[in-house]
Length: 341
Image (cartoon, rainbow, N blue to C red):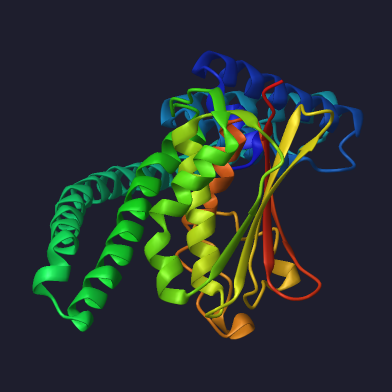
């Protein structure tokens, strides 16, 4: 979601109505100052459609009527001549009818989007319980595997645990992304010890590390950050899981932290030796449901959910996140958080 859309979502309906009324008047003034030589008619659609989307059909109809009237007044003030006195009123009625059609279609689209979002929320929410139960059973099996299971069965349990953990992470991300976008996600910023949180995250992806026989090198210079420990852990686990997923076997993953601005900012970096990301995709991978084309990398690049969650979670904690390709190959994901000084 862009900052402009976020700004509009944060406003009250009364504020949005006032802002769009002012915008309609301004467009009318542009038409008057232009003397009728340049048509600004299409610009009236912007405030009408935007107010309908962010508030509702009733407010859209009200603004459409106002836009038609302003348009009519502008025609008169600019000295437009007509062969009959009723023609400008007919034109205003046609414009109003066009606005009404646009408002109706937009409102129906918006209602469908809301129904889809509610349905997805319920479906995803209901997936979490069976996934958690499956994980519990698999963890119990893992505890007894040395006594009852052979090596192949143990490997199957490990693979199922990794996949189930990833599925549960994605379900939680899908539930939390709308809350992060709307600013309704609780963010508890506290002093977090960097080394401890990294060690905790590495423990949770240990199965993946063992399966791929990857070496993880950690270099921590920062001591603490000001962050939400749960959100930070979820971001790190996702980035580590991605790095492990795309890393060749027996390769190296590096986790580094550094301090900037005299300790006021801490930068985390996670680098792998995977295939990298095409340069023109580096700024797109943090958008929801955006996936890098497998034809460009030779491998599918995930669901388009994890990195979108990371972007929103880091922004909610006052930081930023970006991705870059390394000169020697592989990808480096960096993100910043406020330092605790």
